[in-house]
Image (cartoon, rainbow, N blue to C red):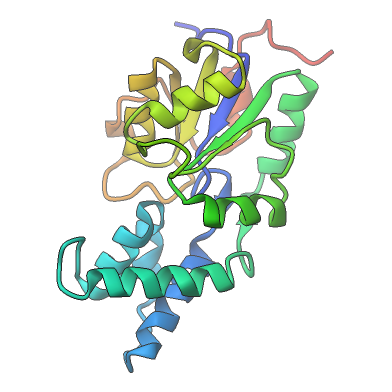
Length: 224
């Protein structure tokens, strides 16, 4: 069944629009070196990037929120990240062309991330996303994904109904949030994807590369 026509497409940030894993891993390993520990291999850290500090500290230190030392590690990690958050982070291949195409089709687009505004706001400017129609961070509303409120806030700021928006993300909680908000959901399989296969997320569509999003658009959404 064809997907309904969107008026705007919303995207997760880390692992969907931008490959931020190099800078997050670098901050984590600076934290380990502060404590006299060797670096954790990048390949071990990358899949946990979408889970932020919780995922990265869990992968590198085996700790979770509530454990002794977790909060101290979290603060140290985020301070290191804030000091160097756009050194090696880049937009994924195909994202600039995709966003340009959406503009040509007169579709809005925005960012909805669980990353705190402290990091989101400077990052979107430094990596080429400053012209987003809205940017919702993890602390913009009282709830973070998988709660639908950040996505509902994005729709409000765009002056759209939730069902007029699609949400694209690379983590299960992105799809859960999008579904709960009443939006079409698209799983971005090029991203970090966490510990479960995107095929199992029950998204409305699954794509392997950014340009494939355009093929999902109804024919009525065409370039002028």
